[in-house]
Image 1 (cartoon, rainbow, N blue to C red):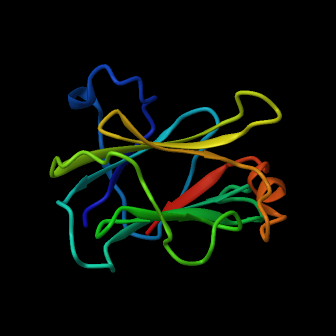
Image 2 (image 1 turned 90 degrees about the vertical axis):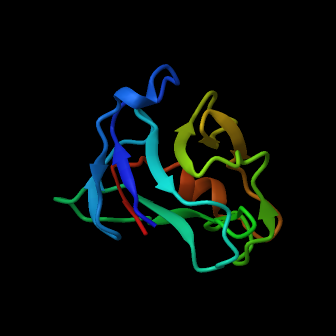
Length: 158
């Protein structure tokens, strides 16, 4: 898969006008996901290959400081299942909803704190909401909320 990202706010008005930057896999970059959604462009169809996935890891430090509290969300292209670090199981047991069949996809990932009590990870594919994940402690995952409440200052994509 070829990945690109942009720091343009995803407002859904004109994706063709976005300036995409190629990103090498596993390259760290400064990024504040609470202020700006992360956008990733992929050019692949539904795949039977379970090795095709996107893994976005975020940190509460930046490239110049100590990096702490890594956490990630990862989703696969064979069945569009996902996992959220320390909030879901280690397997891919839950599916994204209504992923468009388009070959070219623009994934928009945001972390919202609409209220102090209900932070969410939100994922859109071509402007279609495919995930609205409430960051909250779950049975067996009592560090989910504490870990994900940390600020996001940098990220990398695999």
